[in-house]
Length: 287
Image 1 (cartoon, rainbow, N blue to C red):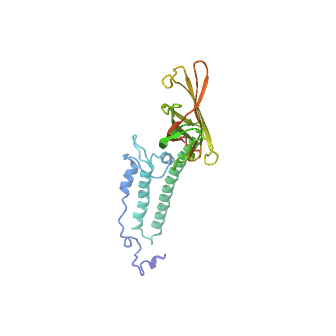
Image 2: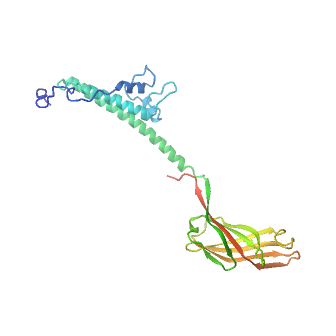
Image 3: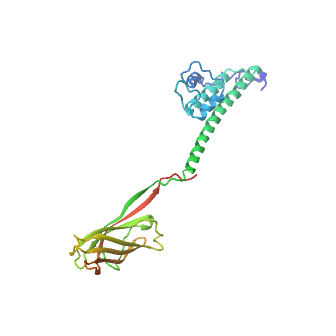
């Protein structure tokens, strides 16, 4: 722009002062933030020391055990550097080539320092991210997990050998394991005399496709359960499960008399609850 054309139509008289109604930017408060209480600190450029501070999220100038974080000081640095450029632009005489050169030099210098500060902070951030990724990927020995329990159904359904019952609204296949709580009834009497939980503790095939079996073999003293205190009983039960159906393949009591005679009697049992268990892995996933 030629100096003799200044202000021909716009009223421009060689400076920006009359063109801008925006007040000066407060750069003194920004500089006070950067100084961090150290009146002897003078900011000239982003030095290697300042860069190291920014990489560690310690701000520009830690002082006497006190420091800002990068966000605080980079905001202040932006206000200080570009605020100075803006304030001096408002009174810049564009017809003074030396003044214009000085202003442009200051603008480039301020932009370079601002950019360098951002680069230092970003590099420090990426260093931290890579350390986190390495920690996650090297955490191969982690076996931490918790198990959640959900009651899928509770009530009372009587089963005997060959009984099949469908429980609407449940999906056994969503769980790692399932527990069936039975109340076994005394043969020929229909009286409750043993409560037993039969549980499949390992991952089973998708029951929607194949189903799976539980075998319950549980030995327990029967001194207070059956008439002959010398008898021992063995509950032998097999339940086939699908997505929402339980089939009792066998419900019987096997016990031995004191003379060693083995007695096997079919009986009935009441199913009183179905619980599902999920294992949640607490280890971080590899990245």
